[in-house]
Image (cartoon, rainbow, N blue to C red; front, side, top):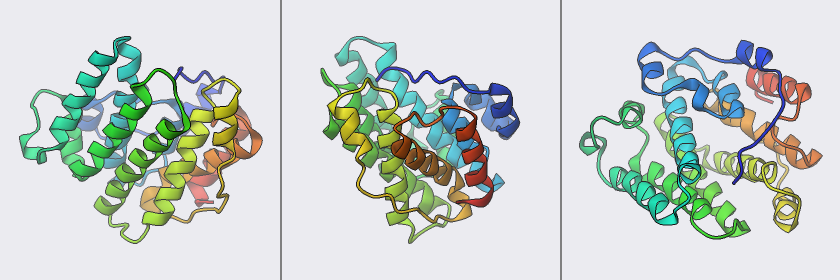
Amino acid sequence: MRKQTVKIDFTLLTLCSCRLDGDIMDSFALDQLPPVQRLALAYAPGPAKAATGAVFALDTRLSQIGRQSAEPLITQMKLAWWRDQFANPASAWAKGEPLLAVLAEGRVSPDALAELVNGWEAVLIGEELNLQAVKSLAEGRVAAWCGLGHRLGCDGAEDAIALAARRWTYAEVAGQIPPGDLQDSLRRFPDATPVRLPKTLRPLVVLDGLGLRALRQRAPLLDGPAALVAAMRLGIFGR
């Protein structure tokens, strides 16, 4: 996928942004996250911020693998390395990779994280992006966020998490690709039901709300000041 290019007010984004704990900030740079994830993370409650930030950071790292290499074999090898890590308990993960250390502290199920790797593999490996690949990415995010929800004590919210993660993914990809059949298919997402999630998953509420807005307006997730205002409303009030 091509990198999303959106003109937004970064002054306002900075005001909305969050400050992670010092040890977490040492492990991954907040400014490496896409603006929309950075904005959503600002609304994570303190106890949930580190684990949520770690999931965002893994999502971002995996998305960058394809842009860092034009060779599908190298991309596949890098993804396989992450999958191999998550095939083991956190205590057996490779040392020296700061993101793995953060993920270990976050204590999200390795199986859930492995599904996110699988989802990104479907998007990054292949000659052409298609609807099935996007669905695979969405399901990978569903698994990762359900794992995060379980870690944060949100058992029972799986259906709402799944709807929110799928809608966010479809809207995100639709806003990053050229007009055409795939974009039209993604923007015909069949379910416009608002989600209700616990406050600990407020970042996903922000992403889902922006996704629903983007699908309705056939626009990117962050398309200007109105989107930032919508994100602030979702982050503060959850709706």
